[in-house]
Every structure is written in structure tokens, then in C-alpha cells.
Length: 294
Image 1 (cartoon, rainbow, N blue to C red):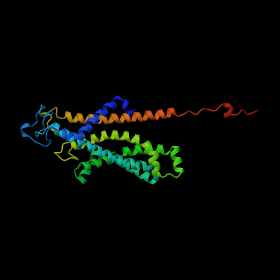
Image 2: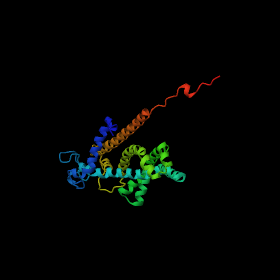
Image 3: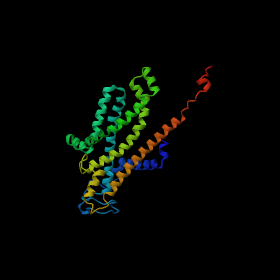
């Protein structure tokens, strides 16, 4: 972690994510007004001391709705990442150790999921199971699971070919023990990088779905829903989409910057380990190739 936070962008990303986490935890408490309260006398008002970001078409305080919608938007993205991690990492690890049949089936399944379009699959899932956050995020998690599968499988394949893993297997160690003791420590850094990157992608997908009214039923506030509402009255409130758009962009940038810092730290550590390995010294010619007497 010290290597990760040597980067200036990683430090800035950590500060941004800390602020976003604060909004997710205390956003509804910090809201100055009721996010659902309507006031027809204050429709489409500009920023003021009472309403810092103005009001929407129903007279609701935009800042309060933005703060109240933070937990839903961020927790939905986190739920999608957790679903994708579970559905991707576990099959990715097991595909290395459960034989050719499981490997072939899991690879074909992941190839099929990659070919499915995100929005169409999410709409189909919500139409089948109901328009809710859990249903939509499970659909998103299923579609991002191939990214976790490929990363975890590649790292597990590399670790499984190590001599100490082969030695443990020859000594009778079980597959579960080898995975827990030796393989997981090599898979975890790659999974962490993928999770950080997929969190940003999931937030964009969540915002897109809520922008279309999928996953969250109005009047529940979300960042994507605020964007959709503000765009309908862009001529009356041209500044309306700025705040939710900046929150989405800043959060996605911070997650991607953190993912880049994690990847760079992992690459630097791998290079340092390779550089510290003792070089094999060549034997003298008199020992390696003894002179043959004529």
C-alpha cells in the first residue's frame, strides 16, 4: 500500500473516494431538506442560500436529492461488483483444478456472457424479475463476471505451475489447502485491480440504468435519475446536470486512478522480485568442459 500511495494521483483518488464514501454513509443525514418534499411555489429555482443547487420541476431541493441518492447509487455499483467477483473468481480458480470438463464448460459460459449486451440483458432481467435494484445489479454483476474470471484464471494458472505448488500437491496437499495457502495470494492483487476498475464501470452502468428508469422506481433519488430529470428542463436550468455529472465523473476517475496505481505497484513489485533473484553463475571452463587429452 505504501507503493500504491506514492503516486500523486492515487492520493487524490483516495481523498475523492473518502468524500464519496462519506456521502454514501451520511448523505441522507446531511441533506438540508426532505428530498421528497414538493413545493409548487419554487419550481425550477436557481441556486440560493436556502437551496444551494436550486430546485427541480417539482420544487424539490436538488442538493438534498443528490445527497440522499448517493447511498443508492454507490451501493448498487458495489453490489454489482460483489456479484461479479463471486461469480467470476470462484469458477476461475476452480477451472484450473477441476479438470477439462469444468474448464470447457466455464470457458464457453463466460464467452456467452461476454457476447450479451449490457442494457438489453438488464432490461430483460428487470422485466422478468421486477424493476428493483437487486434484480438490475445481479444482471450487471453476471455480465461483468467474465472480467474477474479471466484475471483470476490467468493468475491461478501461473501460480499452479510454480515448483512449491507442485511440491505441495505431490506431498498430498488438498486442492482447497493449495488454493488457500499458495494460489490465493497471487490471485488477490490481480483481483483487487480488476475490482477497482469494475467499480467505476459498474457506477457508469448503474447511472445509465437509473437514467433510463431501470432498477430504481421514482421518486427515489439517484445520480442517474437526477441527470434524466435535469436534462428534461435544460433550457430553464442549464446548470442542473452539472452536479450529478461531476459526482459520477469524479468517482469513476478516482476508481480508475486507484486501479492504475494498484497495477503499477504490482508490476513494480514483480520486477523487483525478478531483479533480486540471484543470477546463475556460469561454471569455469575447466570445470564445465574438462579438457580432453589428445
